[in-house]
Figure (tube, rainbow, N blue to C red):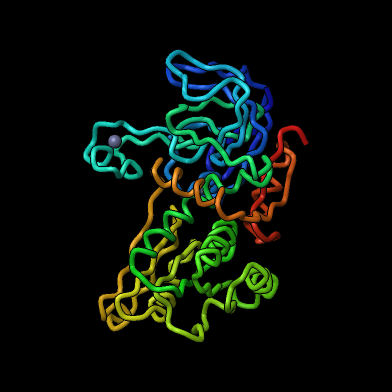
Length: 331
Ligand SMILES: [Zn+2]
Ligand SMILES: [Zn+2]
C-alpha cells in the first residue's frame, strides 16, 4: 500500500510502499476513503510536539471501510464505514480513565502520533475508539468532523456550561467553521476573530451565520460569555480575556500554542477563567455525532490526492483555503 510517512521532525513526508498492516486484538483493518489534515499534523511534522515514534504516518481524521477484523473485534461489520479519531487508545486503569476523563489518560495512544494514521491507503485502528458516522455526510465531508468537529465540540460544550449565548471564535479555520454552525443551530450568537486583514475568512464566517466578524486585535461589539481559541497563538489569550465578561471563560483548544505574553491581572480579575481542552473522550464523540446527525453541518473541504499531502500541509500553514483540507487516497 501507499503511505505518506514522516521520517523525522522538519522533514517532508515521503511516499513509501508498505506492507498492508494486520489487525491485532480488538483492531480492524480499514481501507481509507478520506483523511482530514489537522493543524496537529503540522505540529508533528514541524517537531513542535515531542517525537514519540519515527517514522510515523500522520492523520487522525480517518473515514474508512472495514476490510477485515482482528481477534475480539465485533463492534462493526465488514464493509461498514466508520471514523477513526485522535484518541486511539487509553489504559482503562489510571485515575483519569476511571473518572470519565480518558482524554487525559497517562498512557493514551494517539492516532497518527503513537500509531500510524490515515495518510495511507489502509490503516488499522482499535475499534473500541472508533465511531459510526451519520449517513448524511459523504466521506469527504465527514472527515473534518473527526477532529476539527470533535475537539471543537468539546471546547464548545465546556464553554457552554458557563451559560450565555455570545461565543467568540478566535482563528476561523476547520474547527471554528464547524463549531460556528453547531452554535448558530443552537441559537448562540457567534463572533468570529481572524488574522488582521483576513477579509476572506471574515466573509466566510458571516456566511456561516456569525453575527460579527473582525480582526483578532479589535474588540467585539458586545462582551462575550466565552471565547474559544483555535489559533495556536498565545498572544490571543489577553485579547480574548479583554473581550469576555466577568465570569467568562477562555478555552484554548489547540495542542500547541506559542508562549503567552504577560498581561495585567485586571484582565483575569472578575472570576474570568483561562483553561485548555485536551483531546477528546468517546462520550464527546457520541454526543457530537448525534448533534451532527440532527443539525446538518456543511463542512467546507479542499480535497488533495494522498500523494499531495505535503502540498495540503503547506496550504494549511499559509491559510490558503477556508474550512478543511482532506486527503483522498483514490484521487
Ligand atoms: Zn488511562
Ligand atoms: Zn486534530
